Amino acid sequence: MLRFWPVWVLLLGGLFYWGMQRPNKDELQSVLVGKPAPSFSLPLLAPYRAQYGPEMGIREGLGKPVLLNIWASWCIPCRTEAPLLERFHQQYKDQVLILGVNVQDSETEALKFIQQYGLTFPSVYDGRGRIGIEYGYYGVPETFVIDRKGTVLARHAGELSEAQLRGYIEQVLR
Amino acid sequence: MRRASTWWLGGLLLLALALAQPSPNTPPPDFSPEVFKIAGQLRCPVCQGESAAESNAGIAVEMRRIIAEQLAQGKSEAEIRAFFVQRYGDWILYEPPVRGLTLWVWLSPLLGLGLLGFGLWRYLTRVRARALTTASDVSEEEIARLEAELQSPERQP
Image 1 (cartoon, rainbow over the protein chains, first blue to last red):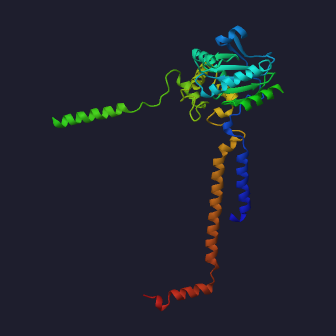
Image 2 (cartoon, rainbow over the protein chains, first blue to last red):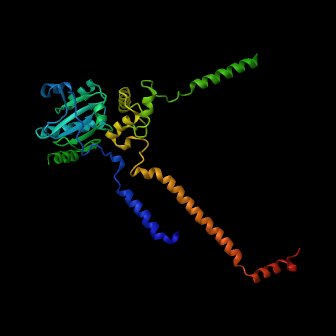
Image 3 (cartoon, rainbow over the protein chains, first blue to last red):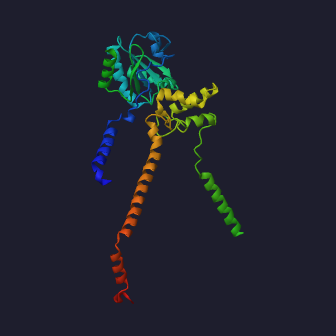
C-alpha cells in the first residue's frame, strides 16, 4: 500500500484542493438568483402613504431596479445599515428603488425606528415576516438585488458595507 | 411511630424531586402534531441547528403557521416540503434528497464498509498464504535436524 505513496499524496492533496475550492456553504446562496422576484403587495408604513399610496411591493412594470431590504427595529446591524441606505436613497432615488420590508416587528417600534433615523425610502409592513419566507430569508438584515426586468441578481445576507451597496447599485444600473 | 414519619418524609422528598424535574421539551400546543411532524423535517433558517418545530423564533412560528394553513388547504406533506425547498433550496431539509452530489452522502458508508471488507479479505488471504508457504518451504533435511535437536540429550530433563 505504501509503495503507492505518490498516489495517496495526490489523492489527499486533490481532496484538500477540492474542499478549498468549494463554495462556502455558510454563504447562503439564494435559490432565487436568476429567477423572477416573487411579487407581493403590502401596506406601507404610515409616513410613506402620502407619497406612495396605501400599498407597495414587487410587481411587473415598476420600470426600476429594486433593492429590497428586509429589516426589523430590534436588529442591531439594521441600525448601522439604515443611515447608509438613506444616503444612497438620496443619491440614487431617481434610478433605483430602495424598498424596505419591516418583518417580525411591531408597527409602533418600526415607526420609532424610521423616525429615529429619518428614513425617507419607503418601507412596507410585514408583521409576521411572510414575505421574508416567500423570498427564503434567513434573518435580518437581508437585501435582494432585483434588476429592471424583475429578476433577482443577488441576495446579501447580513449588514451591507458602503462598498458592497455601491457595488450592487452599479451592478443593477449597468 | 418514628419509622413511619421517616417513611413519610422520604416519600414527600421523592415526590418533590419528581415534581422538580424540568418538564419535557414539548412543543407549544398551538398547532396539530401533524404540523410539528413536518416542521421537524425543516431547518429553522435563523437558528441553525434547530428545526422549525423546536424553535420559537418568529420565522419558525410563521413556518409552522404556513404548514398549518397548507395542511388545511389539503396539501400533502411532500407538497409542503417542496414549497420550502423552492424558496430555500435543499438546505432547508434535514434529510438531503437521494440524488446528485448528496447521493454520495448516502452511499459513502456502504462504500466505506465495502472497501474495509475488501482490505480485510486481502490481508487475511495473504496471511493465510504466507502461513501455508512457510510450512511447506522447510526442507526434509532441516526438519530432520530440528527433530534430532529436539531429542538431543541436553534437552532431556
